Length: 95
Image (tube, rainbow, N blue to C red; front, side, top):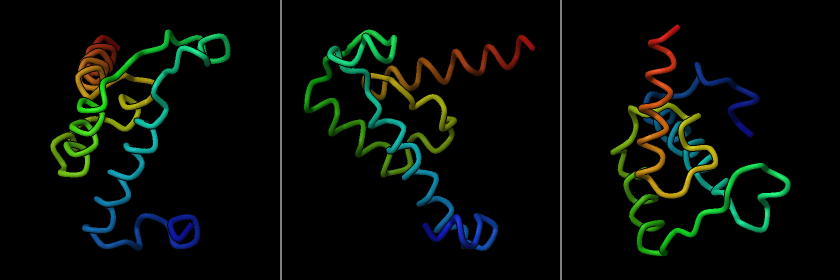
């Protein structure tokens, strides 16, 4: 992993953006599956193929660059991610 070797500071702004989006996609791939509920504690979600494709496209196009990486973890579709980001923002505001 080039980032582990060089660190984020050595990357160009464009490359940093690519890395940030890739990390969001990596987190987004952790969608909660019903068969894994016993291990993860997250209720499984069924997401339509079209919603998954739309969600990935929006992430790759940068539509959600403003959302924190943590909001993408164990969510269903991009609407769930947006909702989680709003919840995280409220939690941060309450502190």
